[in-house]
Length: 233
Image (tube, rainbow, N blue to C red):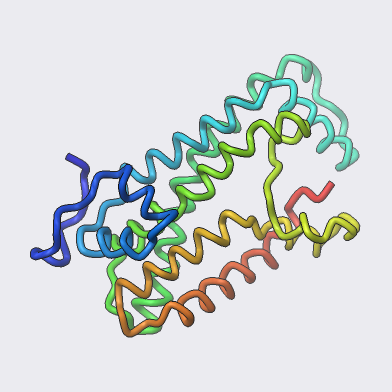
């Protein structure tokens, strides 16, 4: 039995299995949102997403992680640490562990931010566990997309390669604004649209359009804040 919060609607149908909710996340996000809004369930979705992140990180060969780290050090005009030739496997393992930790922390944190915005400031009738449940399922989209990109990452020798808005502005020179566009990953934009649908389902007074606008503004503010730290070479 999957751990989940007490049902918000005792008369709601049983919670669909995770595989069905994952399929609905991609093809019928409204159905997924209806299910988890009535019977919040987030743990298994987060666990599967974190597992996919770990897998996609670990599948990239150690030598590619080592070459990427070497290039980053050169770009920052820093000296290479002694014994670096032996650190490729360690970089891959630490990247795998770090990716999983960030996955959980980011999900909990952003669910709190979404709850604060919609339930506290805007007065929507939503609970933290409902928003977290929607978010945990929506994040399966970038997790699956990242796994599908592994062959391209290996071919390009770039373990951090994503499909983002900067892809369409390839003529931009590396710098802050290219970093902002790089932050805007296409699969994450899709996930935020799914979350907006969930916000609408949780409280029907909140239209999908207004929820999506608010969340995209939030994402843009994050991109402006963290764009300077994104790799653009």
